[in-house]
Image 1 (cartoon, rainbow, N blue to C red):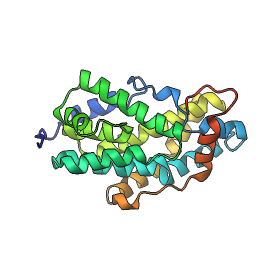
Image 2: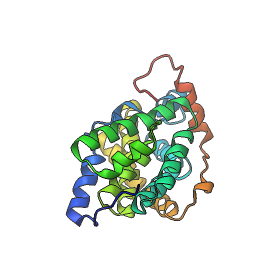
Image 3: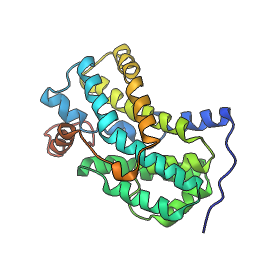
Length: 235
């Protein structure tokens, strides 16, 4: 059964929701994940602001950032079109498209938390429909995209906000782990702006059969993190 989608949200309403949902204070547990960065820092691959920029640029443009962005775009469009079959297929693919156990935990843990909190505080029929269509592990980009489309938030703006939140969380982990000063952390976020914009633009026209990952060293670090002797993060 199709779910009606509300009219487009006002600009102020769009901004308010995206700032709330993708704020570091939104209770999805993002602060507890480093996406393998903790292991990369221990191994010496990332050691300062410059190497952190290079590492995160790869993740955003060729790793989880790029694949999440494509999945986000397709989930958003499926909700807008009230295409239940397409939304279910994207949710299933997103849950399966995880290179390591810890990265799967990172995505689905945040996805489940986001859906739970948002359904309680910002309810919409689209989230309820998604949970009925796909009872399996819910990837974070699919959960956020469904809520955004369900509230009538534009795809392009929502996607940019999602990618910024994804990158900013990893920068925050780097600031704590390397460690870096807060100003250096903001320099890293500023330097990632072109990569985020390019990834969002590519994702808007990408097909699901183009999904790929090309960050093998990061995936190796994420697997290595599973047995790291001392660690602060869950991934």
